[in-house]
Length: 229
Image (cartoon, rainbow, N blue to C red; front, side, top):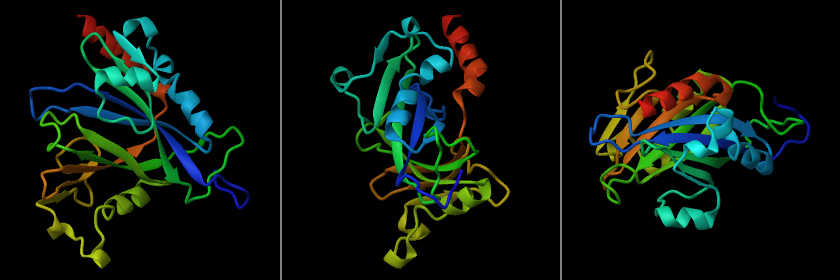
């Protein structure tokens, strides 16, 4: 909720991603969810460390399950900012749980530090093909959070552009945007803007509705069953 009273300077978002690098270039490499937004970093980190278990997973199911920076070292992980959990499933699917920080521009506050209303998040993913041609080298950040899809979509359409600094659609090698009545531009579910930089970097801008892991329990359980068949 919003308030005219005291609010925290930042919001902390729990990002849950699953990735399976496929030889099929058209296959979805990574799926990202935002599973909770908090006004307190400690509360967000606590949730990040239990999110997989809330989804119905058990620790023993993973072939690797690491939660400490020194444990991340052995995997040559390319993305460590805010990383809290790194796990590998028997089918080689990689699970990451991290915390992303954004300014609390809407002045949200909550007594239990968790924002309980629906939020729509603008998420930007930079795929660094110059570092790794598999697409695994990517950075994902939350650029803003809004009360409605329409507000988020409007922000998403401008997030890569800065006309006052000379950055326009023509500044990119390629620039694709979903139409007014479309929710993706052909580069993955919820991806409303796709751009290619001069160095080959691919940029994906998505609008994601916050999703509690409890609501994803059946989906995740089905994934586990398929992996053993």
